[in-house]
Amino acid sequence: RKAQLKKLATQASVSADGVHVELAANIGSVEDVAKVLENGADGVGLFRTEFIYMGRKSFPTEEEQVQIYKHVLEKLDGKRVVIRTLDIGGDKELDYLELPKESNPFLGLRALRFCLTREDVFRTQLRALLRASTAGKLNIMFPMIAVLSELREAKRILEEERAKLIAEGIAVSDDIEVGMMIEIPAAALNADAFAKEVDFFSIGTNDLIQYTMAADRMNESVSYLYQPYHPSILRLVQMVISAAKRAGKWSGMCGEMAGDQIAIPLLLGLGLDEFSMSASSVLPAREQISRLSQAEWKSIAEEALQLGTQEEVKQLVEQRSASR
Ligand code: PEP
Ligand code: MG
Image (cartoon, rainbow, N blue to C red; front, side, top):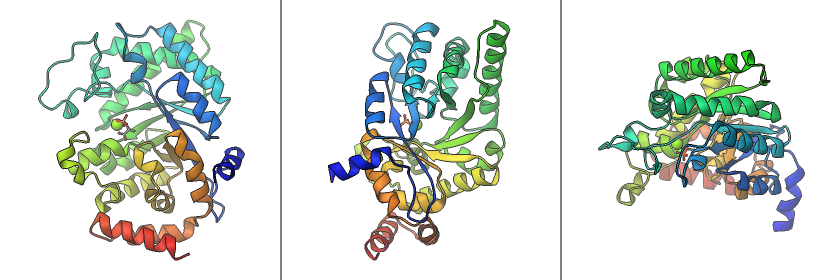
């Protein structure tokens, strides 16, 4: 089976009825790129850049970051690389940064919220991304957006840095897509408005589930609420995918759910364009999708949305997977 999977590494990601999707991989460092290439991923769907900032004594410089982003873009050789701006706070802390003590850090000053209060840190990262952009196909993605004003502010700062670089005579790609994660229910519910102002969405289900269920993703005593196939989650996912389609944009998913065998047929049926997962899941997912008919799972997904519990959804998927 391993050898069989290996053969799929050079093949396209396409469903049994001919629908092409993108199967990308999540990375947290330059070292992770080897596995991405080995497993024949169609690109990088999430580079968690916070790991560049962790385990050191000070913020990484612009120059250090340029080298890292360039390296990843070059290695991916023109395939899409989605780089997420700094997602710090919540459970992720930096030794050299005193964040305010908060009683609910996951509901506090994390990710883009933090970046908008520390523009110096944010601008340094954006400059590095823009400077690296000519090395490949760069997509920039903002995490943890709840309201439009945050997106607009982030984009305004990005455009300012782009203009500065161009004025300095530094080359910047004119083909950078700018998108956002959907990991807060408010953003999913308002996806139509967001879709007009981004090039793409990527659904972060790890946080989206946590915030929808009001259940800390790290807390074992409420882990039973961590239900990716729950109809409430599926409905939010559907809203996001549909809003993207209406606006002519593409949608992806980079939470754990994107590589989940039960979720994949439903996500394909709902029309998700890009699935980003751990590199080791890419080939199994490619194999699974090659056996699935998107048209058939479109109607099964619609059925799933009408159910009341995660268990019923799981049963439906298992039944319909086995019956063919
Ligand atoms: C997510 O929330 O689903 C996600 C991909 O981001 P992270 O796991 O880094 O919070
Ligand atoms: Mg997240």
